[in-house]
Length: 109
Length: 116
Image 1 (cartoon, each protein chain N blue to C red):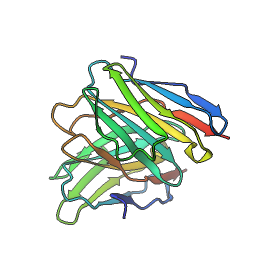
Image 2 (image 1 turned 30 degrees about the vertical axis):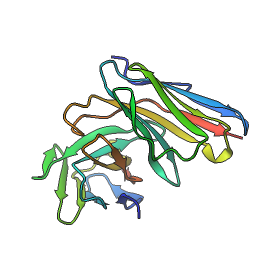
Image 3 (image 1 turned 45 degrees about the horizontal axis):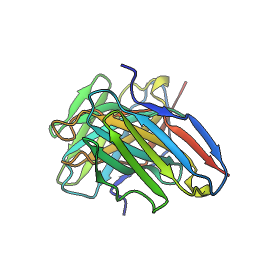
């Protein structure tokens, strides 16, 4: 079983739609959680950290459920520019960071 | 800041040849990571260093792979001999580790390796 699992998608949604991605992790010792975004043929870049209480950054909301070992990312009012692959990242205390395989999102006009 | 610098951007080689990938982390960052990305397996952590010391190399596929970090500003990932299944994008990333895992990971642009 992979340490970090994501639905690969693809998710194809119209502009303005709300879309949610889920991620599960297997190691309960995980310390920190992040969502990264990767555009085609580019390097991953940090989108947002995920805090226990949940956090919001504009149209993006991230949530963490430690009991269920589950992380989510919600995108509201999706834009064409949101089209990318979204990577779930789980990190341990020693800076070991593990990536999920990513969920591909395409936002269409 | 120039960011994480990787070279070369693209490498095409023949099976059996030695391949060396290079990385210069962001100045002042003390953690460096090597990742490999393929369509089938996603982004896999190969090895990472803290303060130039290898911490975990359990992700290195086999003895053909080796990584070094002789100083804080340079790291190499070497594959010898290379095989077609090594074809992938290899990313180097660095971070400033102080408070563990709360620091942003900065990636280089990657090296696209094709082994024929």
